[in-house]
Length: 307
Ligand SMILES: C[S@@+](CC[C@H](N)C(=O)[O-])C[C@H]1O[C@@H](n2cnc3c(N)ncnc32)[C@H](O)[C@@H]1O
Image (tube, rainbow, N blue to C red; front, side, top):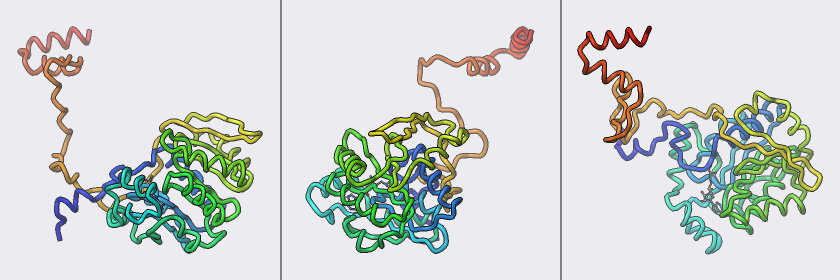
């Protein structure tokens, strides 16, 4: 059966085609924590609160191992939000989201869907047992009351040594996340390991050994700027920059032609024409000269340039 143009247009050919907020810096950090857990033989479930179109969920699921469960919780529909502020937030920022869009994206990269909880994150504690998760990504509502309870839920479901990631902990437009994040640090025993532009990575345990590993691995930190900060006597690392993306899961549509444009012809793509009046680059001038001047003149010019 052939896909309609609209169906094909929705098929992500790579993780870049999935709408969302998951920069390469955080992909590198997720990869670090999840691979480290695998290396140390740490088992446990994975949890994401706030999946949107699936960008970070698709990435995270690649680290799921036999016998583990990946739970994803999202409203998927603004009208199911538990209060008017949350509904307004969802209508404003996630108006195109549907559960079907999430599932289609996810199944482009993985054979089976995660365990999906459709609804507000307050249902998470009823569906995810305490002390079962090794990695929790908190990225649902960015309003203080919700983030506060999401962090408490994360603390309860995490196994000892498990990692929690708090999204948008310092963005200008999300002061509620900042308030809930630092409240958890000062009042609820959350220990920050490191910060990126967008996310805070922490744990309820000693972050020292993980920080030492990060600092010792110059190769891993290539492409990132590292700084050491101290907050109330505790070390916190800060990473910034745009490192190369780690390998992301491959889409089953990776080899499809882009849906919106005709398939490119084999060979080099033609360069876009320069706008009228734009200055020509030296290579272009040389090619133009070779095209329009008599061969004898072109040969003479080349000889002079070689000399
Ligand atoms: C910032 S987006 C998640 C981005 C996603 N992790 C990514 O990588 O692209 C936030 C998501 O949280 C969901 N959301 C908002 N409020 C929620 C709530 N109270 N409970 C569950 N999900 C919620 C929204 O529907 C939206 O999909």
